Length: 134
Image (tube, rainbow, N blue to C red; front, side, top):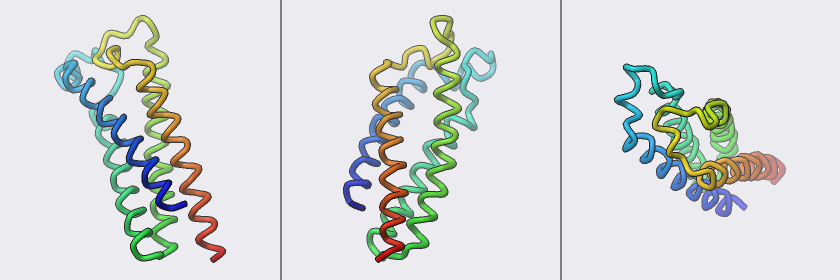
């Protein structure tokens, strides 16, 4: 189950990289000064940084079997998920009046990233829980 979790996580990351690319290529960084975008730079870069850090902990767990690494991955992933939820609600709140780079986000990509992220979150907690029983 740990490997399935890693694959789901990688899919989530790939869609996230695509969304980050759209935001950056749409002028997201340039729009910070004019406060056009609803996504602060700290939020934009903290979310993937935490996600990648959690994934690194997960890979270390898979390689070593150390349960503490699984729970560390879960904790860091929970923080990343919270930031992702903040971005989602900000994106949703913009609605048809979005002016920033995030208006270029395709609905399908946002939904895929979010649903895959939720699936990853559930798989991480289930796998970490089962690892604690073995």
